Amino acid sequence: MPSPFEFRLRVRYGECDAQGVVFNARYGDYVDIAVNEYIRTLFGDYQHLLDQDLDIQVVNLNQNWKTPARFDEVLCARITPGRIGNTSFALHLAFHEYRSGRLVMGADITYVMIAPSTEAKTPVPDRIRTLLEQGAPGTLISHAGEQRSP
Image (cartoon, rainbow, N blue to C red; front, side, top):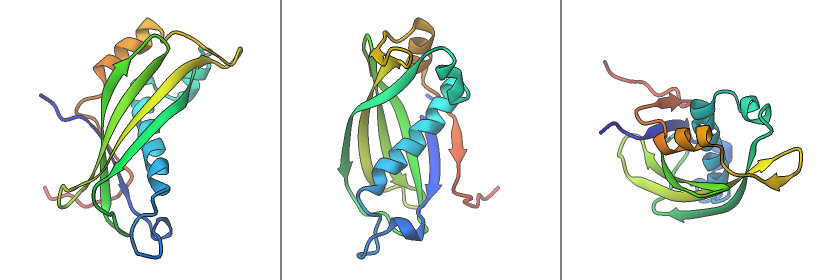
């Protein structure tokens, strides 16, 4: 079975608090950045959704911190599809530290599909549902610039 979609990012100095660890509110940013890359992988440019009078809005975000992340560490966000309802869908994220593999945080996020023209919920179209069900296994996107050994 292929590995799940993975997005890597490096913790920047300004994202850390007085204790020298990632400030808790930054994890919401990390979830958003990772999901944007996931959505881009599934659907292409985000504008592609908007051109179909489709958009997504967060309706629920749960985060569960396990261990602290620190400046200059590389975090790997692994994303897998969750439940897909009539007008909503969920994604599961697990953030691991790249070198050690330790679990830093888990997150579950739920989006509702809307039609921007009416600002109302709309059913998840079949073609979008299929892409969400398949996910993006084996895809790796890195913004971390980490070095890899051959």
